[in-house]
Length: 312
Image (cartoon, rainbow, N blue to C red):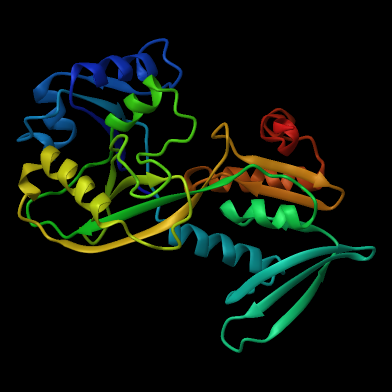
């Protein structure tokens, strides 16, 4: 983990009003400070001192960051210490229920061999694909895939002190009561609704930015005009990046639920589900899942909020 804090970038009065409503005194998100003084903004994030567009910051001074890969590697090692076998390189094809329990049919990626595994207890933890696999077992889990994409730069003139996000998309989603926080329409040509931005600088100095979203799975495709739109926003905020090239771009599909809360709990005896969480909530969600399987009532209130049956 690190001591990197977070900052929301406010570019106009409309964004400032929404920021105060959400993050200000009496707002629903606690622990943030709204900073409008230019000198203080430059002190919090020196990379913004030459920016003409930034009017204020939402400063999350108690924030932090971790390396997702290293966290997952550490958790996997701890699981293996407890006797867990982690089988990588497997593509799950389908699941079925029988009198003796569950059968998971999967394909070994390297050899192509088809293998059936038996399980007394089954947990569906497949991100947005939970919807498909739950249906195989007769259950409805209303999670949808959200296409997201990112790009990277290796800057020579910018070192960030904070993880950053923009308020433009948040304002649009709030005003229009957009249930799923997407930036473009769902069907081609994916007409733009708004822009969203978040960014982080990793240890080797590389900047990673993202935020463009389409409410469907695009199977790893990168929409070039979406990258261009994100780059335009980044260079508007950080003029020192105007000549910096993109060194990489990629995409993936995220799980989004109807109410933006995780879906966690029992679908039937010995069948459990966990989906709807990004990395930020992932570890805590795993704790809820373990409590649900054990039935220890430790997180009863949170599990009630996360109950898969709440949509029926």
